[in-house]
Length: 221
Ligand code: DX5
Ligand code: ZN
Image 1 (cartoon, protein in one colour):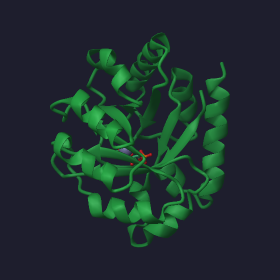
Image 2: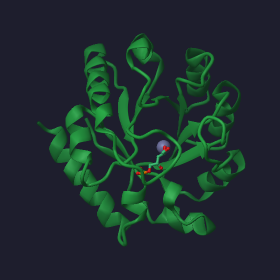
Image 3: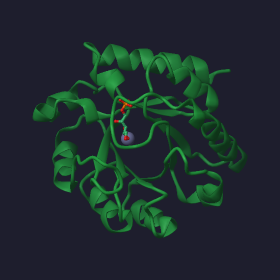
Image 4: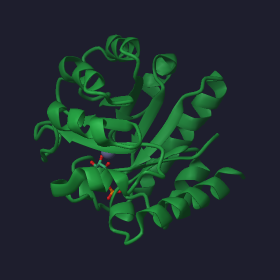
């Protein structure tokens, strides 16, 4: 299981996004939080902004869609140049159809779960997805406190992935920092989103390296 770090640009300086993306060039992905002010009480980027970021980003974009009607909007983010498109289980009408559409577009398809959404109803759908995103805060804002109550779900997701024999990544997002990343890795996460931890650091590259080292060590037991 290879550890991957996906810094969220939600707390980056939006007036200079190209520079902010360059700051995280040592990471595996740039996590782009798309919010529509309906699914979550916050509004961020649309397709045109993602298209512009895809043109300048040194690393692939990991788009996390916190939007209603992903069935209608998600394929547009694949067209915009994302490498991975994750939509929420609570918002999708036809998650299997949408995941297949995204994969047919050549991107990775992810399924995200809010803290109160159990993973069990979706376990039979694992072969349809490349990643399961277990939210470790209520989605909507950066800089929130990590929710330990979500860790058992990370563990159950990893156990199900292992039992399936599939190569499905397990991502955690929200409050991931040097203080919490080891718990996430120990529970079975392999893709780590970190927003304020990375963009709040003077040296983003050093912070990414620290997070990667902590997660890698914690994955190995
Ligand atoms: C929350 C977003 C997260 C957020 C993470 O709704 O999905 O990606 O930006 O930020 P931190 O790491 O600050 O919790
Ligand atoms: Zn996110």
